[in-house]
Image (tube, rainbow, N blue to C red; front, side, top):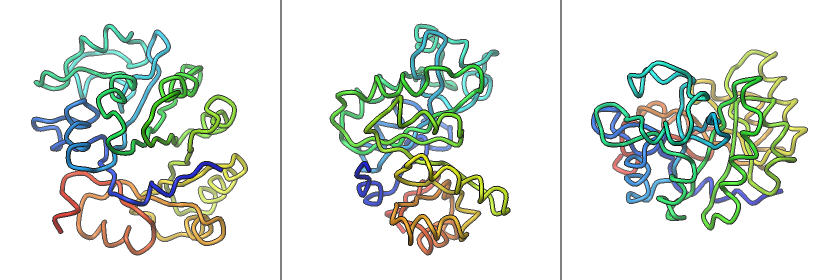
Length: 239
């Protein structure tokens, strides 16, 4: 099992240390540099580009972040570099761009965003970018079809399940993913505490982080039940 204790050490900036998309937007090199400079770990999202590379982007569509129409998986790397984020000078970066900028200064947790039937090769693309990277890095996903590929397509990279829900059927689905040797779990802070999280921490001794902490109340909940926060909108070390 991959070592992942570093996941507990510092708070994780959700999509980088942005300012809620006023002047420094989510999932940009500016947000990542700000987080690294402040000493926070970084969470980011990736989709597969039209030419088979990992693009750092959350949504499946371009409109909210770029003002353009279209789907992110239909964009090439060259087109992504030409897409401006909001009214800023930041463009849509690749994962490789982001890793080069971060340069191992802080850990990075990469969430793979699947589009079933349109994401073949995403796990391998992320693994290629991480090959030889000197910093601490992990991958995770909500998408079970991607998690099933982690061991084969990204061997040796710490891997986690992103999850939420309190219903029995949701928790049982999460339990089923433990068969794929995950190294950690990232759980919705609003769905803590629950028997799945308790089992992962107490019986398997795996780290659990929370998403997304946006208030003192959220932080208090997270601190009571899991090992680390994924936060946005405030500085958790100033509290």
